[in-house]
Amino acid sequence: MFKTGQQVVCIDDQFDPWVFDLYKSLPKKDSIYTVRALRAGRSNPQFVVNDDAEIKLAGAEFDLLLLLKELHNPDDPHSSVKQELGFRSERFAPLLEATEEEEDAELIGVGHGEKTWEPEPAWSK
Image (cartoon, helix red, strand yellow):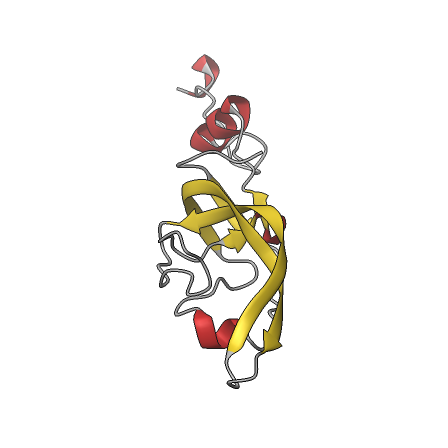
């Protein structure tokens, strides 16, 4: 599960052709983003063309959608509720944060072949 402010990495940037007509900004695979908001929304929509040659939404699946701090998109034109188009949560993985122990090791250079200081022997003076 994701939370607001969490960093995530995009693991799936393959979109259906219709997405490029609706979205202004799309995530790129292996790029890091920050969760701006989470909300219920729709995904995998099915469209139909009516008698007036208008494209209408015929159905969709309900899904958990992410809004990302780095990307902003227009409102969903097929929704009666004014809400920004989001991205399915399955497209992202949580960015693994280093543990405190790993951060400490990185700061002091443990395990990186760094030379340690050794006092000069008294007999060498």
